[in-house]
Image 1 (cartoon, rainbow, N blue to C red):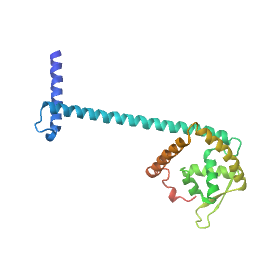
Image 2: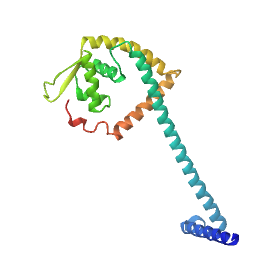
Image 3: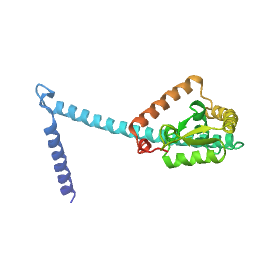
Image 4: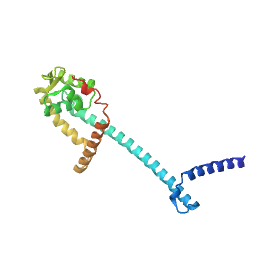
Length: 213
C-alpha cells in the first residue's frame, strides 16, 4: 500500500516537472542542463509566491483603508450631530446644502443635489426639510420651466452663521492630533480618491442629468 502511494506521488511529480520543461525557455542558457533548469524553476516559484503575497497584502490594505474611512465617517456624524443639536439643522447634508447656497445663491435643485453626490430622492427630502424649517425657498427657473431654483432665506443665513461656528469646532476635533503638513497630505490623498471615484463610478450621477427638479 505504501509503495503504491509512493509510486503514484512520484508519477505526479514527474508529470508536473515535464509540464515545467515544456515552459522552460530554450534561450535560458547556451547549454541548458539540470542546474540551469533548477535555478529557473526556483526563481519561477519564488516570483509567483511574491506576486501572491503582494496581492494578499494589497487586499488587506484596501480592506483596512475602507474600514477606517467608514469609522472616521461615523466619528464625523457623531461630532456633527453634537454640533447641530442646538440649531434647526439635523444632518450634515442639510448643513452642506446651506453652505453651498452661501457661495452660489441660486442653484437649481438638480445642481444642488448633484454637487453633494446624492440620489435625487434623498436630495429632494433634504431640500423639503430645509423648506419646512423656513431656511430655503424654491422658485421656478425663468429659463427652464421644468426646473426650480433654491435660495437661502434670511433665517437660513442666520442659522448657517451660527452652525458654522459649531462646525468649525467639530472640524478641529475631527483632525485630532494631525499636524498641519499631515492634514495637507491627507487632504491631497482624499481629493485624489474623490476624483478617481467621480470619474469611475457614475452610479450616483446616473439619470440626474436628464431629470430637472
